[in-house]
Amino acid sequence: MKKLGIYIHVPFCIKKCGYCDFYSVKWDEESENSYIRSAIDEIKGYRELEDYIVDTIFIGGGTPSVIMPQNIEKLIAAVKDTFTVAQNAEISMEANPNSLSQNLKIYKETGINRLSIGIQSLKDDILKRIGRIHNFSEALQAIDLAQKQGFDNINADVMFNIPGQTLEDITDTIYQLISKDIRHISFYSLKLEEGTQMYSLEKNKVITMPVEDLEREMYYAGRTIMEEHGLMQYEISNFAVKGYECRHNLKYWNQEEYIGIGPSAHSFMGNTRYSNPSNLKEYTLSSGKEGFKRNIQEVMDEDELMFEYIMLRLRLTEGLKFAEFKNKFNRDFEETYKAQIEKLLKDNLIYLDDEGIRLTHRGMDISNYVFASFM
Ligand SMILES: C[S@@+](CC[C@H](N)C(=O)[O-])C[C@H]1O[C@@H](n2cnc3c(N)ncnc32)[C@H](O)[C@@H]1O
Ligand code: SF4
Image (cartoon, rainbow, N blue to C red):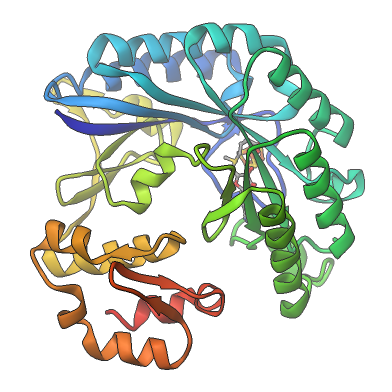
């Protein structure tokens, strides 16, 4: 049976953070109920995928922990009613520290076996500055309670490159998470996205972004501490104790198939990338007799698939394996990209061995340049 990942986008937050451009609206009960009805309809509409086995489910957002936990149960039940779900499926849910604690027992009983908590920082002044609604002690308490409830597979999202953040803020935050036995950290460099509050503040010179050297120093410092404590880098922004890598996200980087449920969710099936409307009203109204209206983003030809695969695989520290490439595209990688490999080796941007190529640390720093050379 072919494997399938399912991403479910829950588009609600209590308050929009200053940096975030993920699609979400302010929560209210009526919108939650109409969203749940549509999302369940959408899941059931995929009944034709009966020759697939679902081995990962990722409930993301927005903030899935702000909706009724019974509704999370309903979403998972709809998936189980519609698809064959693997016994050992990874079922992840994103959560905000202050809306998680009271419902942990239900999440566990529902079969969620991985939590991704938006910690961002363990410094209260930084949390305030980026518009978070929790403080550092609530964040630590959420981790404690989740672990007490039996969750050992917990990711903490941590952000660096925040205006006013020091190197010590970052190292302290990471040391504390490691001392809490956190086994996965997504370590994101703050990027100012157009349309967000922090983007305007920077444009109007109210805040100033850290200089590039400090941004890199923060990244290197975080990476070193995590690796010294057994959280090994497996992707540009992701670190995990061996065996705790996120299986769902690995599907994206391995160019494997997944469907996205909910407003703004993206899917990749066969050679086609498509997405749902990025607006809750439009999404709920888009379901009709012929199913949900979706936007085809890209029907990819062989060259496009190949280029994208190279780019995605090189994000992983494991890199690109020649045998897998040959198996997927029936092409010899070393022969096809001989000139590029020579140049990137000379510039110390990749390592090469009998099995494949992978980025050096320098290659990771300028990964977009490396990717572009394969175009
Ligand atoms: C959907 S949110 C996480 C779940 C939950 N809503 C929360 O914030 O606690 C995904 C993560 O992406 C990261 N993120 C969002 N916007 C970002 C940006 N502009 N730059 C860097 N990281 C960002 C944050 O670390 C955030 O926790
Ligand atoms: S970071 Fe999380 S809580 Fe903040 S606005 Fe984005 S999705 Fe919502």
